Structure formats: structure tokens, C-alpha cells
Amino acid sequence: MKKSYRIGQIVPSSNTTMETEIPAILNARQVILPERFTFHSSRMRMMTVKKEELAAMDAQSDRCALELSDARVDVMGYACLVAIMSMGHGYHRESQARLHKATVDNGGAAPVVTSAGALCDALGVLGAKKVALVAPYMKPLTETVVGYIENEGYEVSDWRALEIPNNLDVGRHDPSNLPDIVAGLKTADVDAVVLSACVQMPSLAAVEEVEARTGKPVVTAAIATTYAMLKELGLERRAPGAGALLSGAY
Image (tube, rainbow, N blue to C red):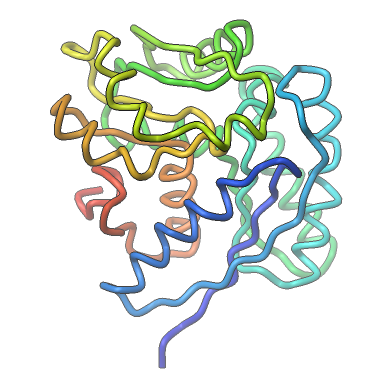
């Protein structure tokens, strides 16, 4: 009998990508591995990617965890990397612990991963020390993301902020632009490329091309979140078309 898992997603209200890319990765996995997945979301209000609105949105994550716990999901992914990182260094650990406790108190205990924590952990899995990074945010928020990742022990040697303030517009960014954007970064001496430090910016379609062009492992927030959820479920971390992290090598 094939085992089915319920994937809970805590999603910004204006996010249109988490519920497409993470299911796309896991649906591709279903072609080669027996497990099946269903997807269940709860949303937090947010339209503009700015610090004040991100903090207000994060305060709604507790409600989302409770709602998803009512559905007895098997794992939850909190998908707003910059919201977590703008709350202060290391905040993903506090968030994950608090939201997990909410599920325990509700009688539907489920592990919680954040895209922020998942991305940092993924760099460790890849053995990366130095990375290049692309983010859709304005420069000050991108600097916050860079600082957060560096506080976790990695060097961000080059980065590009696309400066897209409206979250809906982030979701409309064409991933076919990403290979040329990465070509403008210094990647010769990095260990990995973060193609999208944002679960909302579509990037999955460009991962394999950027890996081929740079010769480096490429990771995105969505791929890292998927890896982290599979790990929490105790499942093989492998899916076709999702780059080095989900190649089966890790």
C-alpha cells in the first residue's frame, strides 16, 4: 500500500508560487518513488515586502499552525524566508519551536520547517562555505537576508537584489531571466548558487540550466524547504529536476 502524507503550507496571502513549486517537486518525485502527497494551506495577510508588514504577517503564523494542525497534517512548511530573517538572527529556530508547540497543544503534533532555516541548513548539507545569491527584494531587505545567512556561518561573496517591492510582481518574475542574472554574478570561486532566496520568486524551471552553466550546485528556498520536509518525514530526499540537493546524493 502506498503511503500518503499531508503537506501543510503556511503561506503569505499574496504568494502564488509556494503552492506550485513545492507540489511540482513532490509530484515529480511520485513518478520515481512510491509515496504520495496532498497539499493543505493556511494564509497570512501580506502584500508589500517591507519590514513592518512582514512582522505583522509573522504574528499570524500561530493561527495558521493551529488551522493546519486541525487537518492533522504530517509536516508544515512556513514559506516566507524574508519574514523570518527580518525578525533577527536565528529567529527560524524560535519560530519553528513555537509553531510546533502550537500543534502539540492542539493534539495534532507536526514538525515545522521554515524556508529560512531550510535554506541555511541546505547550504550545510551541500558542504558550501561560500555562495552567490539572487533575491527579489529591495536592497536593504536583501542585505538583511545576506547578514542572516552569514550569521549562520556562510560567506555570501556576491549577490543581486532585483528590487521588486510588490509580492504579486515577485510571483510574476520570469524564471527564464535567472540564468543571465546569475551570469552577472561572480560564481567561479563559490561552492553553491542560491538561485532564489525567496519561495515566492519562481525559479524551479531554471535550476538545471544554471547548474549546467555554472558547474555549481544550485539551491532555491523552495527546493530547500522540500528537502527539509522530506527529512522530517523520514523519506528519501530525492526528486527529478530539482537540482543537486534533491539528486539523491545528499
